[in-house]
Length: 195
Image (cartoon, rainbow, N blue to C red; front, side, top):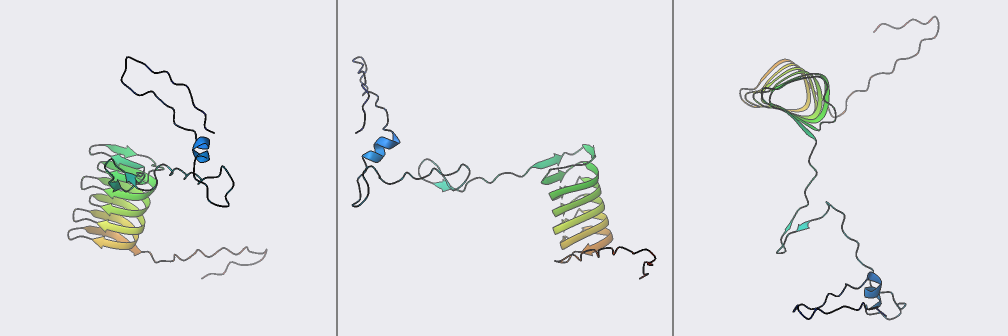
């Protein structure tokens, strides 16, 4: 049996008295029972959706998809020069100048005013400025009409717009990269064969 809380009524206000909402246990007790179901066992409450999943219902009943988490991005702005190593950036946008010994990221975008010198390994790259060094792209490499790639570029898929330039060595990566052959240990007195 649900418990009631005594509520005082204010005669000066024309507002109905505040009544606390019933607890989950009280609500479950008042639910209609199905035949053969033990007493006090109503429909189980639906679990609340996890935050950030499923559609979002806006006032008025319209729905929109849940927002996707943004990538960790680093932007090197126009007129800024950066030297060193960039770590944990999923997306690197270069509008200024970057010199790096080794960079790992998911995406590299060099704008028309950007210059990158060094070595990079990324999933996808879009070059509208200047890249000078070693570029390894495991996915798509797009060279825009204002883009110039100098040095060594390796990629799985290549798209070059009219006006885009590639100077140096271009290598296309296959679906399977050949594994390096393991070195065989030499026994004493063995001679390493010359290939």
